[in-house]
Amino acid sequence: MRMMIRVSVGLLCAMLIGGTPGWAQDAVKTAPNVFRLVLDNPRVRVIEARFRPGEKVPVHSLPDHLFYMLDDGTLVLKPSGRTAYEMTLKAGEALFLPAQTRAAENDSDKTIRALIVEFKAGAPASARSGTAAKRKGGVRARGKGKRPARSRRR
Image (tube, one colour):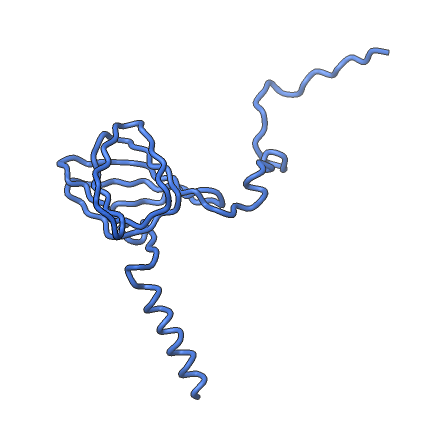
């Protein structure tokens, strides 16, 4: 009985600690009204962000990522424990950002859209080496059918 109570208390503590704001919070789970998962595979995760005017996103964590603007705009980023700063980009511009935990805010009067491409560490070897094209059903070159037979010279 005592062992069962200890295990239960241990699990409860782990759940409480894991839910604190200081720990990494997934962006999509933190603000589903702003972030929408577009693609998730062993190498990358692509998220569409739609910041409506005045919208604030609570603290969330992102690994190394590419931020690609779909609309012109300025966002206020607030990294944990650091001074907030404005990021102004035009549609079509991209910016690489290192892993960080931050809050974000659109303090403008127009909607700002962006794509966030998160890079995953430790991708499986098959995903890194491009072997998908070698497997049956993989990517194949386009053409007009079979190649003509080569003539043999003797």
